[in-house]
Length: 228
Image (tube, rainbow, N blue to C red):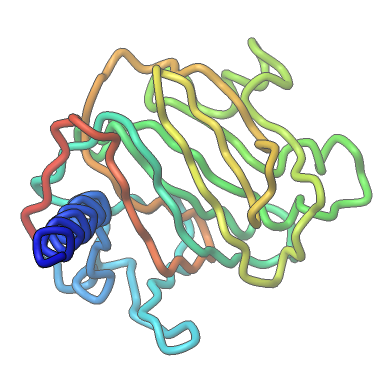
C-alpha cells in the first residue's frame, strides 16, 4: 500500500512540475516600465500609465504612429494576447495593436485595430476594422491598393468602439490569425509578408489607444527569451 501511495505522489509531482513548466512559458511584460524605458525601447515618451480594473494599462494619445517594444526579447511564433480600447469618434483618431518581428523603429510587422470602424454604418469602413501590415515594404495603403481585402477585415460580432475588447494573435507557420473577444473563428487570417523569422514584440498606437494585460506565450522550442 505504501508503494502505491508513493507512486501516486510521484505521478502527482510530475504532473504539477509539467504544468508549471508549461505555464512558465507565458511572459507578462511589465507595462508600468514602458514610460521609464526600463526593458522597453521606442517611443516611450508617448506612453502614460493608467489603470484597468486594478491592472496596469498603457495609454497613448499622440498624433503619428508610436511603437514601443521589449528590449532583449526574441519571439518567433506563439500567441500574443491583450486587452485594448480606442474610441469610435472621430474617424481616423484611434488605432491600437501589437507589433512583432520588431527589428527597430522602422522594421516590424503589425496587427492593429481601427475602433472607429468597428460598427461603422458604411460597409467599406466596417471592412477595415482589423489590419495586418509589414513595415516598411507593405504599409496599409500599399496593401489596400495592391491586395484589396486580403489584409484587413471586419470583426463579427463587432465590438463597441468605445469599450475594452480582448484580442488573441496566433502566429504559427508564417500564418497570422486574429481572434477577438473569445470568438472561435478568426476575424483575420493572413500569411506573413516579412522575411524576418524573429524579432521583438511591442505595442503600436496612432492617435488614442490603451492596452492592458499583455501576455506573450512563445511556441514550445522557440528561442524567445525575457530579459526585463
